[in-house]
Length: 342
Image (cartoon, rainbow, N blue to C red):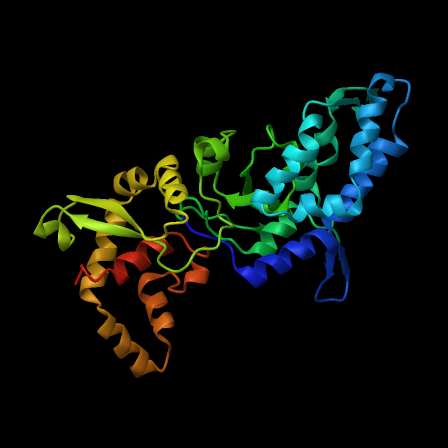
């Protein structure tokens, strides 16, 4: 469980996500504000069929009138608490609103009855955006640079384009699930890049509010929580046996409950102990064999930084703001820094 929030960087990216930006080649990349406005025009204006939607006209008009540029911007860039307030005060009444939409399937025109909010804030369409000059699922993942799952910190969430220009990028967990909160289906702070295991097999459509989960875009101070390696005997201390437990030390009173709930919810203790005991033994062995003094010697001998020496040995980053780049970074750092293992 790690935070992917980096104040200035994250907030600037959020702004670009909404408003667009100029890329390295001087090209304008349009933001999600423009995309949503285009969907409103296409689905609620240009292709709006008054006759088929006669009984929905007042509701549709009321919804459309709420969607000013400022309101769309609030939806796209609002922080988690702000989104909930916006939903409860202004949009909850539209949760089950419907509209007759015009669709073409296999060259045949159909008129399905669809959810009004989901028609505009549509996650499936967001993932399919393939235009380099438009923000979409792929570009967001690429610019976020979150290379491993923030929930478990053990599975890669790679983003790349193949030689045939197929876009490969991670799943997004909707922290506030889109089935219950369709308005936030493409909101920046509601899209958490994560692995399939955490998103599908653990989180699914469960309500993060009811579960009281930790939000990965919450700003955490270093060592707000740490893995604790607890050997049952001397042999396990030195990595010779597997008789050990993992526990967690949480020193952040503000986020303590959320962190505890999330660690339990995603089964971090069980997964790490049952599936990665060999890795944990290796980390402990390296910690004992290559003490901090050894890394200092490498640093002084080759003229490289401590962080570079650590990365060579443990194959992960030491810096807190890079724990999201490689799997098991948090576990390795915490065991290395544990003064009880020496």
